[in-house]
Length: 359
Image 1: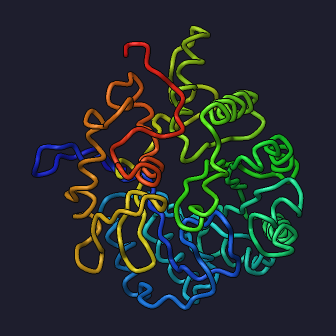
Image 2 (image 1 turned 45 degrees about the horizontal axis):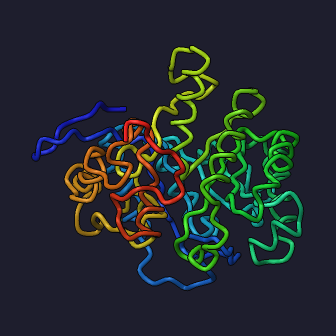
């Protein structure tokens, strides 16, 4: 990975570590929390194969990175194998986010052959009833488990993703044990951001006290070392990690508690970016502000010079209690949740309960 550079304006340009590409918005499910409000489509304006290859080529000029092929459901894109193979040939770590229902042993084996190193499959409930209720399609739970079984048969590594809401957070222990029993490589827990169809279930967003309890529980599980855990859209986790280490008198390192490469909270525009199905570049998929379009400007130029990204990188300019918080450079608050709930991309994270004692 290349090191940080400096933009024409004098701001440091952080290296891009992860890029999520919404290869298609088509999907065979209709999940209540979907940030894209994805459905069967069609969705005109999807990036062509040639445009996708150029994106992957442009990324390679910035270094080798993790490229997340997502959607919608990326397996509905006919050229997904060709695009994956091209990215793999360039040296990117190619991974894919699927709902599992379309996976078969043959498809899982083919994904591995073309260079997919891991797939993520969502499990949002410990039972078919709770999972299917959020996914809004009967038998989605059984389909996800069948997809996991296909990965197991093909030897394709998989992780489990869970969107955490008020309704299912009590099921996290059971989902965690399920992930371990199935042999998942990791469990990524996404705290709900009320955007897309998620706006319609805003009442399911965890309250500040519930949020802190959930993150503390996840940290305790991470310290057990049974399964790698990565909370997402949950930058306060990194504040808790440091507070816990300080209380124990432990030296803080990236490897503390098995948390390799987990040294910062919100990476939107600072180490992570999202490209939509029609080429729009966003800080993340949940933050619906556009920094540019790769059909008009090559991605590396957008990453380096977009005003939106430069704003997000100046954490000292954040508003509200994020402005003076001693953990602002560690956590940063969820920029997507701030924008979705209070309309200020630089505002404080509405569900953060932390009050800096210095204030």
